[in-house]
Image 1: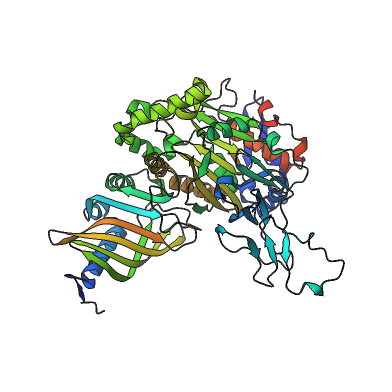
Image 2: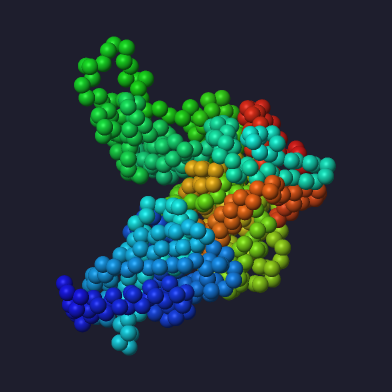
Length: 166
Length: 435
């Protein structure tokens, strides 16, 4: 499929553009702007490494935020007392292999691979995985409704934590 | 320090009220070597919960006290712990993380063992002499495996006291958790498998430390206020205390600012949940009496079972165990424990409340990891030789933010590290020191 190919009125290029912009906001710690990319009913989830397909209502996750929780997470990260991120880490996200999985009306399910590097205190931690997002079109712009970062790591070792937004 | 000299690592001056730990206890790889023999290979070590292998043939593989083991419920229904190494030439006979099976077949030469560990198949068996005894080549178990209320422990010390006796005062706290459901408690699917670039004893201290909450977890406390908890409740000093429970086990117990899914309502849970949680409380009170039910539902506990099991019955119940890979690096596994029969909504509420604070993506644990890694980095300045753990030492009634319970851990550790056999350390060794 060429980058310009269209599935029900959305192109992979458009999805990629959106994911790249999102990654740039996160890497730049422009987290309040990043929140603006989410719908009011948005969720952000990171399943535990042994249950990549789990459901957060029945399975212990690493992160399972609704928008309210995520707003709090962002406020904490931008404040002074999220010690794991104060001083802030540097991050760099490489996002590839974006694919449109299906389109239903204004709802688009996409997947993409990610590598997120987190640099802090002379350590580099590498988070490898894939995204499974549900995007919606709102007033011609894309917004995130469900955002799931599924780690391929067998354990958070030696990372020890997910203190950034993956 | 030229030689690791364990007898000099703890200063316990009860008259002056000073307690110090030499930082080489955290930084010297030779100390870790001694700990493996004198601490981890002498004590009872948590291996898993029986609910993790509910059906005959169910198994989980993991490392316990550094060894690869299989936690398995045999086809006979008995939960066992088998050492995951083929008695032929050593390969691991089970290389899946979990599953259900009738046999474990080593892929190297196809020696086959049943779920009770017996050797039941050897290709070309006629090649072995009469002296070869298949029974003796069964999968090995740790010398001792015992269970208390579904908590399965192993010991590599054949002479260790029975688990019940070893647990001493900690049994009461396992009961407070296990009694929360008539149907029994179960481990929820999903393992928080993480790590810390820090010495394992830093995580012991941190897990039963009532002093760091207000500072390290300030953002969590602010989150509670945001969620509707009365700011006065968050700001006032928590009622509670730290206790030594014998054999190095220790606990802090207090009335928390947060909700507890078992039956302590908080605004975050929503008004609709209030009546349901009160009904659970009433039911437990009918069954166990008001006092026990009050503690189960309304108070929080951070429990250490010496040396490396933490059970925090706080925003939810987490079981956390860890083992040092190196003096400055540990692997940690944490699970959620929940009433088997709780409603789907309460289970979801419990897991949500768990994640507000606990685990490597929560609003607290990452900051603990940061703190402990920061300690480990700080220790490199070895001119500062001693850490101070004297807080509350001369206080008549120890408070929740004193360090009595941390000293209890260290006193047991120190006794074992000096070479005392576990059987010769009095159960109340740590308690007698301060009471």
